[in-house]
Image (tube, rainbow over all chains, first blue to last red):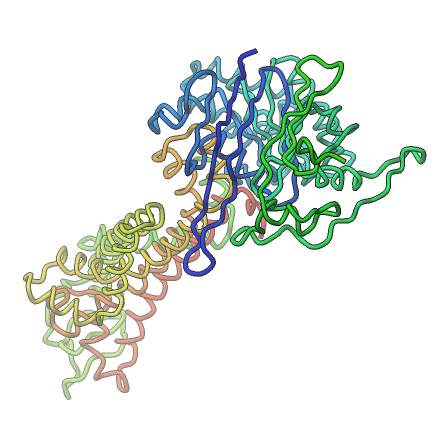
Length: 327
Length: 283
């Protein structure tokens, strides 16, 4: 299968004025997103997952590496062509109150993508807006109201309407339910699932909440300090996590079933200072299974065989699984 | 926009402001029809036997000034000068300030810094000295005085608009709009400018008062509007030596300036609230 979106060896450094040196927010990340699938990107805050999402849309310019969308290398395009491409790739932000212009009515907000990409005349646009409102579960009389007049869940529906009205192929959702009440979260997640089915969408779903990712991701990439430390199908990640960091994250997901209660792995300390990342494996100061080599040598990604599953790719970047060192 | 206007007229203060502005504007427009006398005519009976100005009477409704001219007529004609200066000079200043502020705030980088350092330089330079220099280079006319005032007044506006532009362009909805594929001009006109509008409106209205006063100062120094053409500012300065004996000569043009400034301020306030959907219908 040809991936819809390929990220190849991408690096993003942010200059810090004055002291401290540069921060490498995303460090040599490569991954593929298959059409119709959902890639979940998880990690703590500061792991670079939001930066990765913005790089995918070229809202940020990568320091090096490339993003290939639908066969086109985005970094080769001029600003005008990038803008044209955005019709096919849209973003849903975490906080709809911040990401929707407070001075625009819902009608204007949802029509705006059509105006930007010159889709249809006035009547067609209005018909499309009505259709989308129906799809995301908003009533038509909401059109002339303003974002602040809605509840959080309704507002996120407006954002979603705005993102899908150009019929994009790819949606990058950056913590789309994190600002919502738990009861509303599942409604929005189900809406995203319905839309994926009906409109044949591909999602990159960025979240710190593994329970949410488990609900809708096909593939999961776990990020730590700008690097993907483990990537596999969702069932592999949740049933057979390899990287100690992934194991710790999964042990923190609340379990209702008492039989399934896992020992909670508590990580020491915070995510390390990204200006001075630890030597060797960046995770070693917090790793419960750290060995002497971990502080000296950076591990390289390892491809693990997943028995019995076709295309069952499981990569992990950890010395524990280096051949010959095992057990 | 029409519904905004209709809602605006429902606010009592805004309505009052509109009336005051209309009154002053029509006084300026129809000055020859309204004014009882020629504003520049010195009347033989316009001064007391001792040569001091006359108090208000049925003959001279608001009294006469130090040269025996009718104060009411001068105030009515002065409305022309003050309105033109206030609106023109302040309008140009707001335009320049907004343009440079948005440019610097949106571009940032070396261009932005260069614009802002230039603004700082202008701010550090004594405004009055600059105005005097400019006014003495160009021969004073109403237009030149207005432009000189604009050259002095745009600086603070540029500063405020610059910081506003920076803080607004950091907000997430700007990034969200860019992620939709919007062009920079679209973001500037459709998303940034509407958010700057309250600030621009406040300056556009607040600045009228300071502009009228600066014109008065320039007139006093002899580089403003040339006498005998009346402006509210130069009426005050001409007559200030009579402040103790004939206070109305200073007081009445002062009231006119305050009324004009206040009306524009209140109108600007109301307009700002009405244009902000999150504030609409409150107070």
